[in-house]
Length: 392
Image (cartoon, rainbow, N blue to C red; front, top):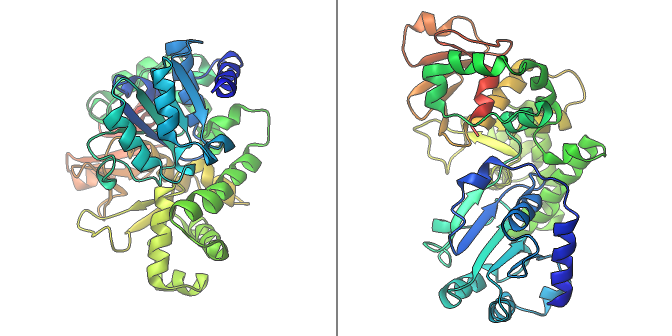
């Protein structure tokens, strides 16, 4: 316990000033069991340490632990939490909890028996929480931490503090909102840099961004998916090849039989692998509203534009990056579906055309919107693409 407390103290004392993430203010921190999922590289550890430092400082009633610690190969979470609570502990933060084999059952026991102890834990987006987990259903308050939104990136780079806005605010008041932002900063001056290297917070580190991103992707494949979905390591080359084929072709309507032939595995395995990659936040599967999501998706995108750059060696079409950006930013708090009339159907009511001509005018429909890349301030149904990066 003492060694873990010293490690906690070291982390708190040596933290650089973290960036306050949008999710921070969305969490009800009074809940007794809080789960935060997120892909590797999006900043979960920094997020947890930021909460510990800003809320408790060096108060010993809070303790941060990384579950990679070998100590927990011979010590259970239950017995440790029991001791921690009896010695004055109030909040136990368990990072990367999915590495611990019986994490779900033991968190349930702690919740049911240690009523004065709060547990906050983090892990992979492949973890089953809430309704997908009978142990924790009705007990855990589950959240997802994404990479930087364009708004968060812009605030950091321009030393601003723009708040997030809702989709309905954009659709009804985008001209006024855009003008107020453009008066303070030129968003388009930062947009392409964000597409290239702004999604993952480790771009702030003084290291090669795409080397770090490639390592992150491989860790997701080799550890997170292989461990949590029990994919044998001998099949890892097939999973890696599928991701490469998707990345080279995205966005595209998948031919499962063709992918099955190229990867040399069954159609059922291809569907499982696509779902794993989607859950791991490496790709985004786009379904029609009538699609059965157990079947093949209507279209596949990479999860964010930085991942597109990590695979392509040559010139990348701006339209591809713009569509990937729109899907990534809008899907955080909205339902996005495939749409034959446009590029995306959002919340089953709004149709968006990315970098097209005057499509909305041709259709003469009130629910069609033209989303323009190189537009600072829009008018009517023409809306700047960058503004959708302010949704979170």
